[in-house]
Image 1 (cartoon, rainbow, N blue to C red):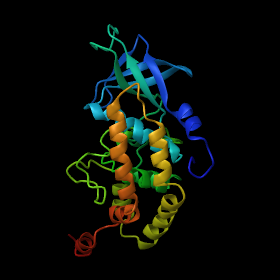
Image 2 (tube, rainbow, N blue to C red):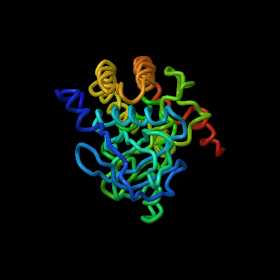
Image 3 (cartoon, rainbow, N blue to C red):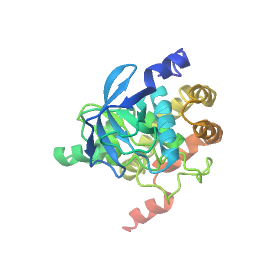
Image 4 (cartoon, one colour):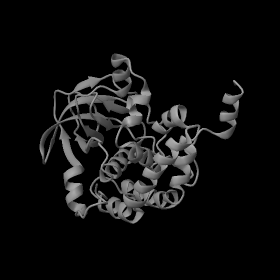
Length: 278
């Protein structure tokens, strides 16, 4: 973990935030709701197999980068982000001028959703994941409303967490739960559904989550990390978004444990309905 060990921020960024150029012979992919291509990106680390995504809005590229950097710094298995330059006249991606798209290192893994269908297991198997407390804390920290089973990769042994474009919504109050109008599904919902009434389980999980918040999530370190990732040669807008997110993180960190406990615990009225057979 980045904040649990001494590590130079610039070294961390050089290893985990890549810059590259889209090569030719990309393949269009039907995965996800965004235009998506698979193929190779030429980076300083060599040619890397990657997904290249055209985000729904201009901020999406920067939000994806920021969330990936934060998640990787917390030791989560998130594909390395790549800022991908696509040049005019690219044979597969039509752009009128040099354009930056979001790329992520590609892994040959099925989605958690597909794995569950093929293995005939229930989604509650993710509750055995050793990094459960960290990914729940991460998703709540960034106010990610969309950790549905398609945004998790799993091959039966290894998890990887993808797609954070909907995080840090501009209208999201950092002191409030994730907005229900944007929420699609999170791992915290799985915890609540299967374990939300189990006081002993919730207590033990919250103890681990509070330790993650205390030991690994330092808003000062996060702010320094994000400030160091500013890309003056790409977009000044990126730097403005970082300033907004730094303020968001400071506010949200103060209420993070309470927000998570509320998200994973069955509301009292729901428990009462269950007792009454509702």
